[in-house]
Amino acid sequence: QVQLVESGGGLVQAGGSLRLSCTASGSIFSVNAMGWYRQAPGKQRELVAAITSGRSTNYADSVKGRFTISRDNAKNTVYLQMNSLKPEDTAVYYCNAEIYRTTYYRDNYWGQGTQVTVSS
Image 1: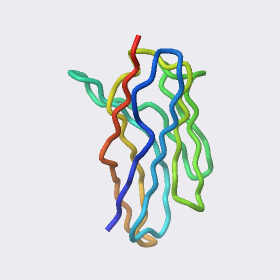
Image 2 (image 1 turned 45 degrees about the vertical axis):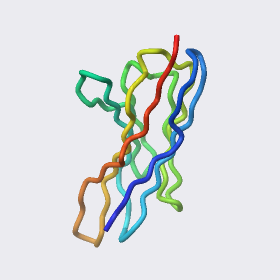
Image 3 (image 1 turned 30 degrees about the vertical axis):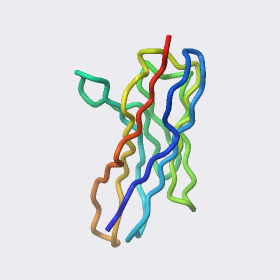
């Protein structure tokens, strides 16, 4: 079994910063791409940022220049540093990872979500 556990959400004023963490644990052979998604009330879940095992990154246009995704492969952990936060960044943030449980069996996993609220 594989679990993704997130931490670091909370309430912050506009212009502030937060750092999210997500650690994968369990029966893991290797971790491929990892990423962060978010879902605001009444909206669809959207990709915020993603990072490959080789550390290539991809960002949503709305967060470029403000958010930074990184990972620690030894710890199976992905981070999202969020700076210059805006009220429109308010959402539940979900961690996602593509994980190989064996050399040939891979699946996609989600964390439970962590609330980020930015006040104006």
